[in-house]
Image 1 (tube, rainbow, N blue to C red):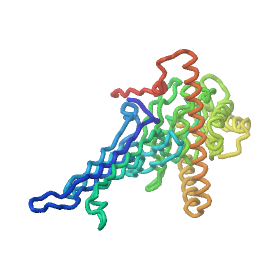
Image 2: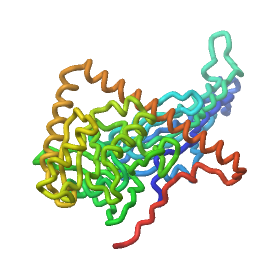
Image 3: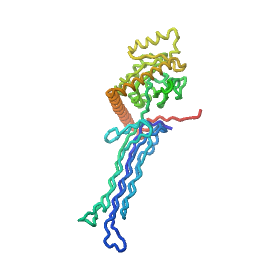
Length: 397
């Protein structure tokens, strides 16, 4: 199957049913009055968040969705049936954007939440509605109105409190396996995660947070190198970023240079996201001799001039992961308490998230246009957005 975190669809609400022109006709009632009924309203289109879904792949194959029309009215003051509403299930964390106006219509952040994206047409009126003392045999009716037609872009962003950031092979997947029940693929050779993974970290009873492992970045990702930056949008909803760095790279490269390269790509993607709270996590300390460990890690911190929190861990052995998880939990609880008690702080946070969304959307669209232009220069007639999907084949263990 494919992990698809973006899709474009066309939704059309149903038309309203027309009003009926009819007069009462019964035996021995030669001058029956008007009895034309109203039409029924057209069905509306809704999106509903469902926990059982984690991809938008269904909307890559069926892009047009239409609700039912309302039925016309009939004689004897019979009203037409209302068109059935159309409810489209989407994953929790889906943002809905009107492609024509670029307006964000809504954000489905919890299971069961519904969003109306296309209003059904209003019903037409039958001639009964127009009778009066001076117009006893009206022949006026109205037609049902058209339903709304909208071009929508669905954007899926994972819902997590903490996001993991780092180069491929920095140990992000191993870390999430160490602190949660998530089991992303890991191996003893350099490769990168292909799709975001979520894990729930349980610190103690009734204390837990969600952590997201996204595909690793490489230098030049903003220009499309590697998997590019399209997965960085999944960090927009997170409260805290953990920047994992391999303190003993297999190729002998500088850990400090790896941190700077990621920072550079992050700033090009979204300055607001780059300024989010970020902790430095020095991973694979077990690869350094114990007597040299402190000096080695401190040298990395000094070279970076890092001023924020620093943690030393070994995701493989679990060393230091528990204290890191506890520190993260305390920080998240403090932030949640501050938001609950300080409305101004909560509004600033909401504004930052909207700003990150806007910056991420603009950057990804610019990257898409650049790639499309490059394909056109190469006379590639087979260009399609699907070229940038990542196909994941699940095989039994």
